[in-house]
Length: 210
Image (cartoon, rainbow, N blue to C red; front, side, top):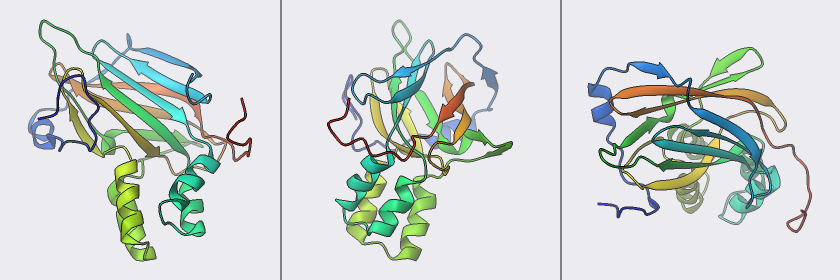
């Protein structure tokens, strides 16, 4: 069991069977607080949902940050470039529910929807990438590093749990999109939309830029 108030890393196995066994009655969270701004640590734009029991923040990652990260973990320049130019965000997910009856939070990235250029589609998950890396014969050590770096496709958080990982949206640098975020809590499935998100542009400010 993961300790309370601790980051889940490596991620615990998600209880996906529970979600599948229960009816997915979706409630659009009109009262969810949706904000955007500049993340104080990353100094890059973020988009965030805060509801009564959950906090979900997505922070831009510059392509250069992603290139360097995966080149250092054994990917070829071409494969690192492929990831870097696929619109990567750092996602921080928290269960912020409180007593007297704090519930778990569950999500499945297959239920999240990306709206871009008049079309809608799914995110590119760990499992999608795994097949691609096998086909491209990426080193196994690099594949493992990549899998642990990404946000888990499915996860269950107990009260106080949180973790983070990269999310990949498969869009070009600078592209704008809306994201429907879906999670299950309090016995229902909830959805909120992050509007006018933007993939980080492919700029090269240097690590010390403010």
